[in-house]
Image 1 (cartoon, one colour):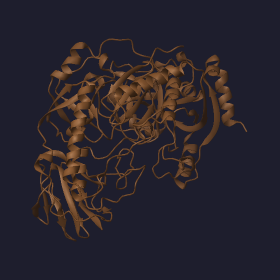
Image 2 (cartoon, each protein chain N blue to C red):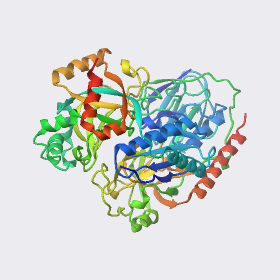
Image 3 (cartoon, one colour):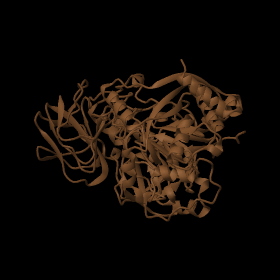
Image 4 (tube, helix red, strand yellow):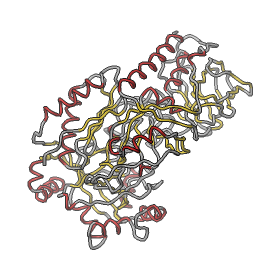
Length: 294
Length: 325
């Protein structure tokens, strides 16, 4: 799939917003990763923030140090130079345990039922039905079976947006709540549009709620081993594999979080977009073997 | 030296010039919303211009000083009293050990700044002392102040500036009806032609949901997005986009109903089409808008935005020159 030329627009006098494509695709995400990496390498004076997103990116800059038109021309030339180069990414694959259909998100969704498209069913029942799954268990299996790309980090501190590494016709799609909730439990697994997310902190949210993970992903105190390097765990380009867990396993993991001994399974991996696009199923099996192999 | 919090006020936080370099991970700029007033308070005292200060919102706190101190109050007109006696804003005032600073009802603006000679000495988190409440980080314990908190104050190095005042022409004036300049763009072209016009024609009122994250506006005509095929992954509402980064100051209109403008504690991204961005020169102005105040959005181009920026930079240069130590 080839992408249209990017669309550039100024966000006031301090931002350039670049839409790589209006629709989501791994190609658009990869193009954003390679362009934003190239911008970072150039160390352009006056550029203060480089923010890759799902199918777009934005740059924040000081127009007293670099003229908006000059920066725009620089970004356009970077896009032209990179072209449609074959893309590989040295990244990591991470197992995130999830207690699907848990009591806390169920309690929360009941409190906000009047804001939902289908007040008589749960978010999981609704998601299963409109995506053509026979029941909630089959829907959960599909959510957990194939890995996900972290395609953007943000909204609030450390929240990953994730895009499932399957063919478009297999992607789970659900609308957001009709009106956003004012509350979402911390570490809820949410889904809106074609994206899953993990709510890094408690707060407002509009994504459908499918489950909860015991694994903290943002912690200014940096208590757990995998947060020692930085208070935010996820980076764009990380690959996530969800693993369903039951109540007993969840409670045990939570106890480990509290005593500081909880850790995540993380393995380095090389991702090649063209190989993946050739056969996603086989490629995902190899990724899973990398995660669980010796 | 420390400040004891006797009453917290409505939303009092430690803020400085802000936190740069982490927006791509969802950690916003933060920092004083009205940067000019914040800097004026520090410059009056001879502090570094970006020393941490208190941002007070509509209802001031009640504070006790453990040692002698010099303070300066700027921004919103929150009438201040020291041990019950009125003191002036925009002037360096001496506070004796054991004295209590309190505030009467707000007269103008929204956010007042209290700077102390030496600065508020909370730890730096990712290069800033600013509070980011959603992330529970920075400032004092990552949250608004509460009664019983004890704020450390830094050592004061420079000469005393006791009695120094800000020249009248360098004080901000807060109006009840303002014009906020906007550079249209981003997904502005998704609006119908009629809505692209009505957004700038209508008078909007600041809604009750106006805080450090963003300002919601009400009272204008609903905005319509032109019919188009829904992009894959964007969601079903005509105002939905594939989740993207939000510029600071950008305006989104979920469901076409009420425009929301993001300020310095912005959520860094999401799935609602942004129709333009408030120019940098007008961010301080928005910070001082009270609920129900009237706002007109005025479309400008980049050249006008940069000219306005140069003018507000010049005002800051004048402020520094007037308060050079």
